[in-house]
Image 1 (cartoon, rainbow, N blue to C red):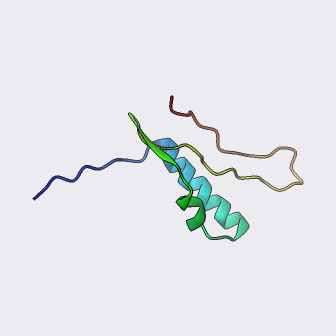
Image 2 (cartoon, helix red, strand yellow):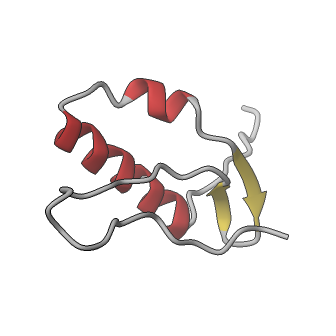
Length: 73
């Protein structure tokens, strides 16, 4: 049997997935298009999402929320 090379998700990528899920739940929209647009790269920590989704909260609040992460060099 051949060994299969695999990659793990970094904590940042898991966070990006969770933000995509939260966004789709808040907007009651399909998560698939967001996931299809993810640009990922390999890093020592695992796969990293270069373009995590932005999640904005209700306009009644004073500030917007977004995903903040370290970008690979």
